[in-house]
Length: 311
Image 1 (cartoon, rainbow, N blue to C red):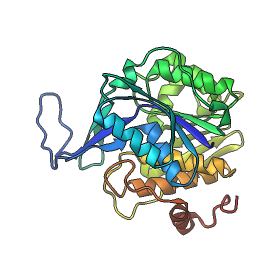
Image 2: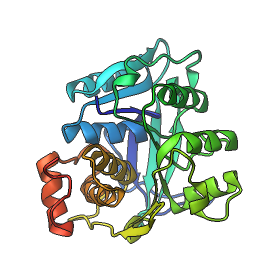
Image 3: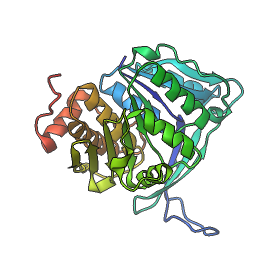
Image 4: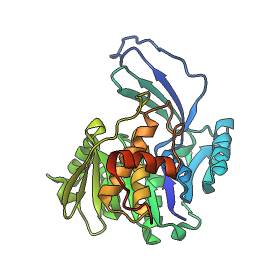
């Protein structure tokens, strides 16, 4: 198996709004979604990797409502290994309500549901068979056990941060950083990690396990920081900009795909930038994901021959 992913699943309700309202102010919904789309940071990345042909497993918690059961079926149909997906009886699955303003900024209101209701000791079936594992925003207690199980199995960990103040208490930041081979974060999240570690520079965050830190900066591209230095990878513009939701998850998927093809962190980040551009072109995090030939075709247009193309 290639990657085991975890994090909150989500049924996403994405709507365009007139503006981001201040407290007590009214904004207008410019459209009213007629259905939710499948989402959730970790599993968005996993689905993108499955579409690229990689062997993906998911460790998630869903409710036994119609949406949760449909999500499990959706993942199984994509070939995702769902043996580590738990369905809690009598619980509702997670939902996100995302409101996108004309400037491309959004507000997210999240209902964690079943995922936060989970309690107990985490058992992961077959974790030792994976080449990589990804942890992203999710219930702190669940994630802590996930990282512990992955680390004990000797599986390299990728940590994708997200701006959720409930997910990463300072003690968990230190634990995850020490366990991670690769850390993906935007410039705001990087500040959170620096404060938690009482560090002045990102290079101070390198530990024994760390191979690279990647700082995404939206349209400004990404910085790849290794022990050898810093490299800037430009963003890849979409054919049309429709919805930024899920672009960071797609970047993570492209980056991990590059690692699985045994490329350099810089080439992996380039692949991430290319994959993110696809997600920007449609509404929803999993609705415009390419296959491997489609991804490579756009990569060549912007970066030339992919160094892992024949791997």
